[in-house]
Length: 415
Image (cartoon, helix red, strand yellow):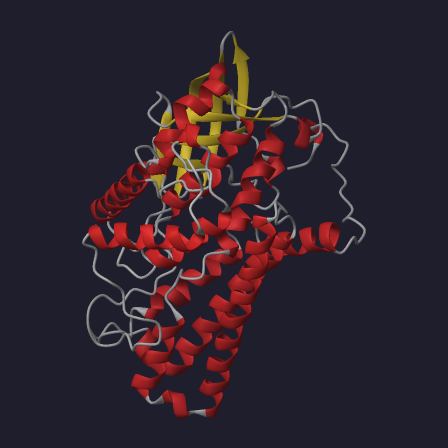
């Protein structure tokens, strides 16, 4: 099958999206104030039933896209994709953005953009055959089982143990901050399989069915209200060796692969926590757009938005030419978080007491979800400090930080 021109593809996408019957979004620059849902939250504040319903709508939409040939555009045909260049994926996203599609969810992004690509690169043929199509089609969802209470930014210090027992591994430990784990069918797990070697060398990765005996998921209440995050307890969970992802002891390389996809995905996400149009509409409604200090804050946000578009265009060009994002992904994440913090600052200045009083007034108290949620992204996906270390060492070539535990066996490291 010949590759369509980008213009032909855009017409094809427009025709299909029009046929779905989805309503169109407001055009950019149109005031979004006074009617409909006003959601500027960074993390979900939904009860379990509502969150499950949201994921159901996302799964249905992804299935429709996948079956129509738009759900995995850059993936090879063997996985249900079309093998098209990245430019076609970007073009579809732009056209899709004109329609009211289901709101994003962390678990869905993790499934499609982090775990499925990791399995494609590092999974066995049997794992790719079993998992990739169901994940890309939205039929099954997968979470990350990485962080632990004593292994967050220093992820390689993790202590969840996996002990070989014939054709299986017996896993015992605790994970935390696992987005969407209560709704996932699979978990990408990092576990320590050799405590006698340095911490980075003794880790192995697995794909774990979340319904295995011994897996217990406990939702965590966030300060912004929702329970998207979870702690996951694993008590003598027997995981078949056939579900090991990568070689024994090579789990850190698997983790770096997934985290690389994570930084790339977060750097391209410009709509978490509301839009520039919503912030501008808020300032105009309150009459604060005439305040000199608020205007300066709005200008900083506007400049950040424009620079983000320039950066995304550059990154898109690199992807199209096969150049990995690498440590630039850490730069993009820091820039993204800084932009969200700037939005929060303007919202606080504009609203004052309205930010903390749930008076029922449309479009005011809802901004508290943004202000409470943004600090979480200074930690999620690697803390600001970790991102700066990556930039210093890998992008600027500065000397690495001293690490006392670099050559010590994990079991001898003080914790």
